Length: 266
Image (cartoon, rainbow, N blue to C red; front, side, top):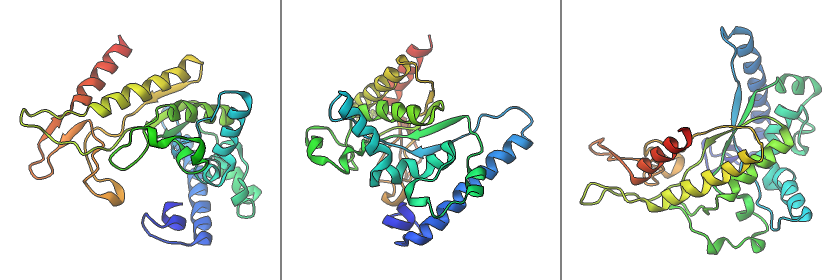
């Protein structure tokens, strides 16, 4: 979507028809790869894929509010384009509306080779894209890239994906960008990331407590690195990297993350 429709990632195209051809090829390659791995693996594999998967937080927690958020997450232009477009063919064996004329019955049979889990990459809620008047983003903190920080989006993404696809969930990416620097005492004071970790992990635990099979959490990222088109300025790591000297400095959030892991595994 970002490469062939929006055009902000390589190869920087605005070509909807090329996009559908590319997507069909990717989906077919996915299904064939799953089948091949199962045939050739020497030990039983657990196979999944990672999705840029953020969904909608309900405007209200009554039945109507939740139903509307679920529908927006998979049937709105934004929801279909980031969720159902890919996962409906893979997990349900059916094409989303955008691909109905592109995927044949034989294609869907190949694409829907059974998988064991879904990975979700979650950073901010989809509420920032439509129905903005119902979501008070201005009152919430932002990352250095301007992304809204609202841990509820992780809970609702896990819940929406589980209820639609009934596959275990792995949080494959979750984190935030900041302009982190090492102070004169050799410390990186990234208190916002500490609050981010506490917020998002507690929302994930809420899903676990409801019985949703969340099989793991992977923070993005271990170290500062290249961020797609934004280069090296946004720092996502819990370890600071001096790009001139390559010196690594564990940020306060890194030590905090260690303590979270220790607490949860004792």
